[in-house]
Image (cartoon, rainbow, N blue to C red; front, side, top):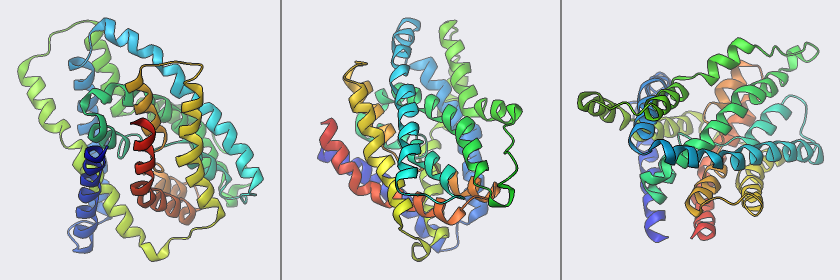
Length: 313
């Protein structure tokens, strides 16, 4: 367990580099945007493609995919709990949608992928991707709709639920890389060495650039500007208590291999999605609430992971 925690400290050290370089004016919001685009549109899709083509046989994947029921069902149940919890603590209008989304959806790529690799090695990547598929589907369908509803200026106007927008988000480069790699693997097409090497070089950018982005976000937000109120605490309860607990309880009736379960537990208990402040601002929701929840969830994770490692070891 100590080795796994030290590996995670390395991840936070890379975040700290991003924070310090932003303080030194090497990085700024524009650089964060560029890094995010590089990860989401180039490095991560190639990472997905390589993982599907190099780590699976056709038979192994078909066996693996049976495990998708557990994360899918856990996200639905966590979302239903978030509705009741929001009523219980009386989350005000204007942040109810963001609250439910942050309570339910986790940061499965920018934090989830590096942490799972640090703890379990690259053998955890396929299981992390299964949770990512379910998490992303929720976030870019129900999640976007809920954030739109937080717009106070348009409170009496029903939010648009654009099918084209949803399809575009679900067919993001990362998921396309996954599906192309899936088809490549199922058709058992040989992967040429130059293509494999090209993909390897660029896919290795995924983790460091992702962690730099988080460091930039924390600095740009400013630790003094954060607010820790009952709603932010409620988000942390959802992220670090309810979500992993639902996974653990469901595993009693939906048994999966031990490594798969442990990866799902870690993926379910990740910080808030990176893009929440940007989406909250774009849709007229409570940007300060979203940003505070994101940063507190990232800072708090350094302590939460100690408990999670005790659970899975």
